[in-house]
Image 1 (tube, protein in one colour):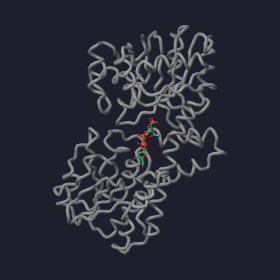
Image 2: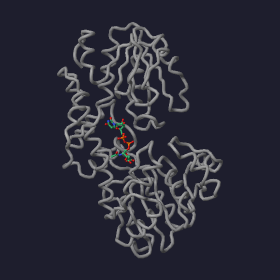
Image 3: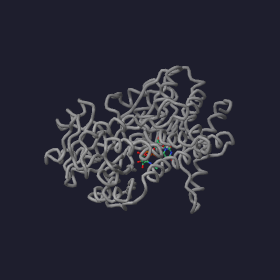
Image 4: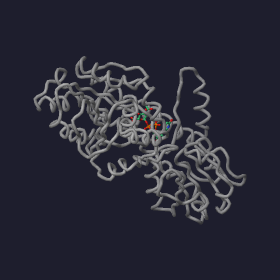
Length: 422
Ligand code: SAJ
């Protein structure tokens, strides 16, 4: 069996490799010539645990090859980005899905399966994808089989989750669903959940919206705790001992290409009936400003205006800075402070912890990398009255003379420094 995977990014590349590992010959398509050249030359361009090893294997076995143009195949998997448009509700920009379809239409043959894995707005399969295929003269469900099979993998654990997560198979017709289930059944060990395409679209979006709304609740609780002088992290810990409560964790905001993006697709599709999702988005996007305000307070009695940021990625132990709130915080702080960065996961950022902390007054932890669990004395020794503000509650040890605040103790800072509440 031959498959084309269109889009060799964070999802398309691991997907290609998993297919190839399971005996399916994969032609991976990317419009970027340098990505194609690097892959064919044996180099991967993303960091993901376990990916490199499998990639080398399938390349050696000649089960994977990259190219800029699609070729004839049994199935086509579209895994291209779907960013937000810059319109009122930040709707789904499906232009890359549309151009991927345009690229395969001339080579489609009766019997082919077309799967959209990219996250798309509800009704995209019915209102946009199916009409494009029909306009080219095919009958969906009879000669072309069409399905939406959203991926649900967690960056950092992709290679495991791609195989073991339950997978939604949303066909345009039952025959489409069966054809797609047959393909994914070759490697998915989790349940194959058969659904209609529209249900698959909305389920994927609501999974991430669920998380976004719950994180907003935790972020709101962090602000409430600071206002009321109550430790919100302790509240979360205790509340979560209730058998039916699962409060999430507050942080510097919500980043990544999913949670900070997908809820808008739902909002834009149904703006009048989605006030809760809209408010949650507003709370989460307010967090960078909230962090900056707290940094100003912590820095107000310091004469040395150097601030060191620990981590720029949108979450821990990955190299991905897309939609990262830390980037926004960095840009805001750079207007007022001398900002240095310690980011051990992003390849071109090579300042050591010692260098980044030298002569600094404040460390602000913005990503929960494992490297930040213990802040060695050598980092803080050359700081002036070192203070750590840990927005991810990740640090477990710091040198004795260092002052440490997280969202649980931030309210104490205002008394200590005799500051007004933010
Ligand atoms: N975050 C918090 N507090 C929390 C949990 C997360 O502030 O309690 C923040 C993280 O720091 C990060 C953001 O939320 O900035 C998103 O991180 P995440 O780990 O929740 O999710 P992603 O974006 O890496 O992956 C999500 C996953 N969705 C769900 O868990 C419902 C993943 O399964 C999806 O495949 C992925 O989105 C996607 O591609 O849609």
